Length: 378
Image (cartoon, rainbow, N blue to C red; front, side, top):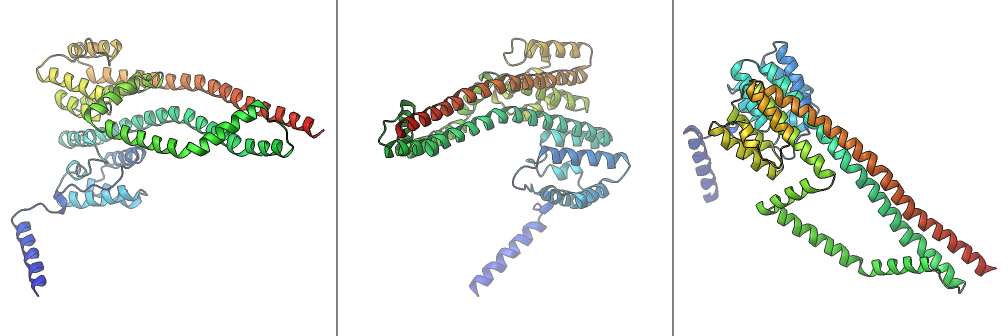
């Protein structure tokens, strides 16, 4: 009875709190686990733009897209947003409750589209931005994945030879009472050493990964990691040009949609994943808040190339900054494409030659051992 009374009291307090004006379910941030892929969001945005262009009301458009949406998480978000829109909220307010799925850039542009009555145009720009960002991300991942896969295959092949093939040859030589060739003794020593101390290397590797993750999760650690990434040979140049392209496209998209300059820089700063670039954009925003030009803020910058500074200067002088930023973004996106192609063309022959030398040398050594073994048998 006492427990039942306590439960009833709690329920009454909750009801009274709701009546007093506490936030309802529709007023709370509802975030689903895991991020939806950029491709799914860009497809949804493009479809929504098409429906809005056809003069379909927003509530009906969300209902149609929710019914035909295959992604379970996005379908749930759309159903929640539909209920919010029908209760009187705007679409930007509804989607802003899901910040992991719809970032500040997305929400700000939606809000501008709703305010200016150009939602169709803004959604089209958003879809194009997301498609470009997704394409760029895929290209960078592909460039970094290819050599990693080749190296992993080479490691597995070496492990198979060292731990699978070589011990068989060693036993054959021992059975015939013959002395083992030098290459076989070397590989057998490596095999015995690895088997004996493998757990130490595994444990040490796990400790290093754990410590590095802890360090890189701190502000100073992230700062050091971001700096190292930008200084990495070849890959650092790709990351730098990709980030510059992202900065110019994000800022250009926001400005061309009617977002104020300072607010656009604030959103762009949050869109930067590299801490070094984030701090640089923050510095530019401080200049903008004082009414100074972005060209002056970028002068002497070690992160933004001189070409970006000059393109922005021309854009400011001609009052065509948004279009100049988007042209600059296109230029650097093409630069990244060319870099990735050249990187692939350089890495591929280097890896093939290296693998050929290593695996070819091992195979030749195995054949020599077979010849030695045939001499012993005779």
